[in-house]
Image 1 (cartoon, rainbow, N blue to C red):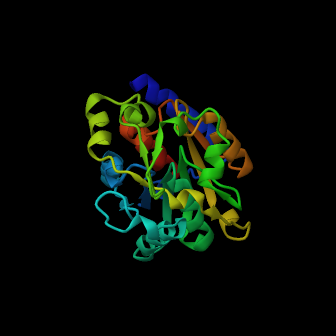
Image 2: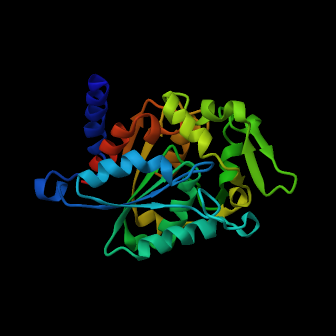
Length: 269
């Protein structure tokens, strides 16, 4: 394990040459505020270990619970990407200064919308195995363009078309194939059907706003929900040059939380 992390950190420093170039020790140790946003079919619990690790280093961490996820009782028929966006903006509005905004999976579209709305409040925008729509694209558009994804055949639409379920026998295979038994059980125990409407909402971004925010992307190389090939295409389209790779499935903060924590700390320097 130590050898794996060592190799990863070596790659991290290599990639940093293209991105955030901070070598001053006083800058490196400055506490940051991280805002962490979970993806579809998940909720704030997925960040528990990463949150603890970041806080141990003196950082402030806010974990956002999106509407109709976790224990939130918002009716699914009133949801939209903008409702998700506004929940994140509300969390950031309670922070003094700028934040490092992190989005996973579906939340990649959410944090993109947030960055378009309040670019001056975001120091760095971080995507982890996440959808990154171009202007005029929706999550659904991107998902339909990903022939390598195994998610589609495992989805079951509700009769009212307001939610999407993942077939129970595929849930852990899709989201945490490389996790231990305990982590897989967490995914099962916290499962909740996903609101469908936001998947069709198109994101509009501009160079002036979204384009002005520094970005980093953490690729998930064993991902069968958002394939590495689609991730690479989105990275190229967004012209992101600060790119890291983790050899995990779709939920690296559960299977390799120490590695994800180290990467977020490196990005925050």
